[in-house]
Length: 266
Image (cartoon, rainbow, N blue to C red; front, side, top):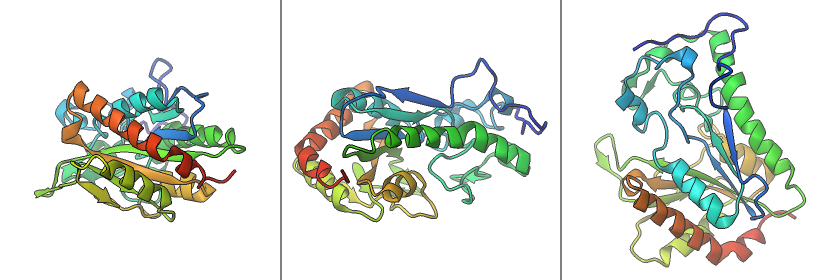
């Protein structure tokens, strides 16, 4: 298992033949919703090798949010909504963490040591920020700036593990919010109409400015109604499960669309 910090000054983190930092889907979609997926990929830049991890570890939840990107793509198509996805693993740099957070480039995740993140030098950290973090958030900024004259809602799509630290997590889906709870309340109400779901209200995670980035900055920071949608990963293990969740979220949004968009600034 090889890794490198790419310590040479001026050496680009990404090679010219590597996939882009950001993926933009349906960017001109006419929906009032903008979708983002912070943990869409478990890819690691070639110059960082495998961060000292094996393939199973990188494929696990510590490397990304399994199933989240597939749900986001289907939701984008169903709602005709623009979508921005991160291109590389959260272990390289977490696009939903402030740069000051220890979990921005974690030395350990879920009790797994990340060898390639040990003792990162300032130039090595800056290379990741410049190559991966800033372009992703600039893409979201550019998209939202272009919609400043129309009502817009921001939905950040994530997934979470069924068990954490030996504790079962009962929620099928959680809706988390920052300062403004109104959109979260509408979505929870719409999802509750299905009857069979256990819903998390700011569970399994609440949004905190010191721990989260996307909703606090792009949502609360702009005054946009915004939520983080967390789907339990055991519901996303098959293409059928992914389709069910995309359909469910699309239907829930359609029930509240008019009311939700009225919350957004003109």
